[in-house]
Length: 520
Image 1 (cartoon, rainbow, N blue to C red):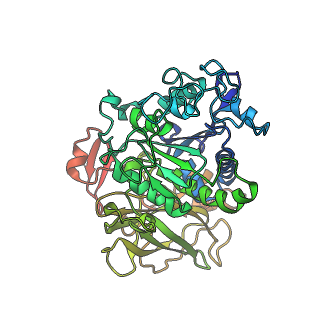
Image 2: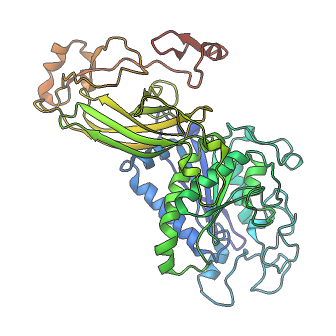
Image 3: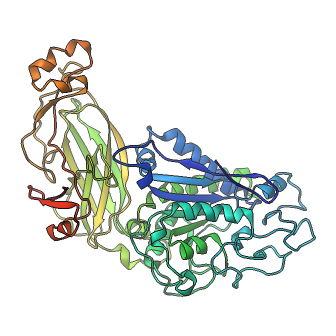
């Protein structure tokens, strides 16, 4: 989509990536993630990394479960070329003109090699403060006014339209250091070169008590554990002042968790060094970062799934899930003090079979199974867990997702895998297995209602309510009798106690083996 035009009339294009509309995850309810690259046109590596990320996400939807689950619950807005005029100039590869700024010749500088505005000093939050220059020919010239440039306006207009207005402060510059709600949604990511740094707000001032700093520390540590970069931000390994930049605007003005990647070793990165040292670690780190868009100030403080293995028995009747989860592992960096927010014990690990913790309540709320700690109890910040799932009534391709919660109640990132379950041995294609494998935990066991299963037919057999009537149509290949799992109730998610449930007028408490807050 063309969002706007640059100073010289080049289209500023945005790619919108998300999965198809679904009842479980309406597109309008998905988490927004805005990603920009190329604000400084001479920095080539960021655009290439972002482009390859987009290509991977689009090609792996429906193939890679992690990618599929993320796109089904997130909307990515990606601006690959945020400064298209200057990229045109940079692509001429002239040593005398490798522009960082845009091509605004009317910004006050008459030297063609120096004119323009530094877009990453032009955003409308703390504009013109120390960390930017008021000299039109300077490389960090902030522009005549805040958001004076068309390229800046395009990004601001996009972000203001997709990030929720309720999470913003009424007068953000009057209260810059107060914490935003930890339920704030969405994520902003800006990619630059160079420095091998992961940076969080603020840039305009170095203070020790920036709101949400615990979340930012955890977020940056986890990303750095993947690409082996250095975390930095206001009050934490501060690198130097930058005012009117993308991070400060998105966090300060919009309340959005914001992260900046400084990738590589120079802005004109050699192809050899890019392929060998820059691309892969940052690609992997960005894949992880996309998982943080759901309430990132909370999700970043929760445990992560470090390993996940899914094994299927030969007859398809049993799927065994094993994993290691940790509140600590991804926050530990060489030479850095441990984070106090990363030492909580694991409280629970949930398995979602063909569902996801971010699914909307109606009509099929996510009904998790609870994994079991290998040592018998959850009492440490890192745990090995396992669960056997009775899949004797399932076959084909299914998605399994895991999410861990720590003792402070923080739910971490979601990790998913596909599993292919074969038809049980001795069972004809299309005929349901009647295996009753003895497993330690199964669908319909811990964490779910234990009401008797009811039989229903599938596909066009839904009009036949007895097994005999359904099986008379088995020869057409469209029908089979399927022993269904207990019906799900419409859960008012997040209301785990009767008192909290009843505070919501649309909810009523329903007593079951596991109490559920159901929709009236």
